[in-house]
Image 1: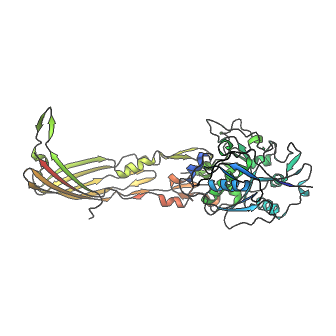
Image 2 (image 1 turned 30 degrees about the vertical axis):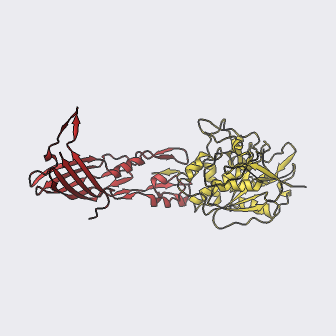
Image 3 (image 1 turned 135 degrees about the vertical axis):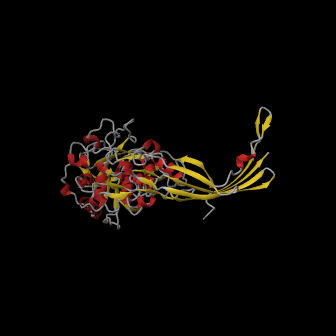
Length: 294
Length: 201
């Protein structure tokens, strides 16, 4: 059996120049991010570990920080998470490292903008995980870290074969894990006036109620960043988790995940249905808000 | 008494009011204190700087995690707006005592306590048709105190009915941190000094 690590970018952008980036709300971010930043807490005290491609020679062109840059996939996903939660501690681990992913004190968020693909037909128990993925799956199942997993860009139901007959077994392994979220991509940020649609490339939860319960969507504005794909949805959820973790310092990773899932909006999605959109569109504003107040 | 909170210097050249090309001199007596040992009602004001601040909070709001609109208006809408009345008791032709009171203001989430105003006014001629008057006042009380809300988050025991700043409950601040931003303020005009120079011509 051959398992291939695959990053999940749907398209590329164009070349330009480097400039400085600051803690500013970028044009690809949900307006809710700026609203949430207004009181100063931006992910402080939370560690976001980005497991991704930091060593290959495969470069992408994108524009996340207000300037165009050529960089590795991992540097883009890391940058995206840090732009959403600028005060979070960012760590990186190359996805070929193979070593167990350690956790820092406080809330940990693991960003997985990659898949582990192999031919369809294997049982999950047949997959021989290395220390890296074993630790990630363990952290997710035991609720030790928020795990934001890109849903994948094959336009299929999670856990089913893509057009080439391959399955993302990392996704399969994370099904039902207590603190794992699958992140799908919407074409834009939704609103009740202009609801968003799932991007054609985005994988979806399908009829499996377990996956539906842990599937969340966010707007991935590739037209502004040059970077499409659920790879760039997962860091948004990682950043949101960090922001929530900096507010709710006594919450466990599972509670943070549940807060994001429970407060997702269905009314900002065109033709919402659970098989396509899972819990709906993540709403940072609602996730930060109280359930009740008097 | 501290006089440097709000110092005004007003020089007024009264009487130069022009109507259709001719001048009318304003009577000199306008700026003179009248008879001794009489009391005059000199000020009526509804609303204060603090009640304006509280009113500014009314415009805010947010949604709960379930999407229900929470408006600040009912929390910061007083049934009665603070009213201040001031009288002057004239003791000599040059000297008078200012005294008064403010009713305070109360809404669900804040209170402005009642206040007393004390001060004096002194006026002296400084030349032909010119007067200098000095007025010093101080307000006792009138403090605004904002009350916290009880909020629940995440359906989690640790965050059930926690005290928060009502206005910041949905912000990124930790719930306990929001309490630092509750408004506890004294009236900004609590100490007031003014000097007025008047020339009548």
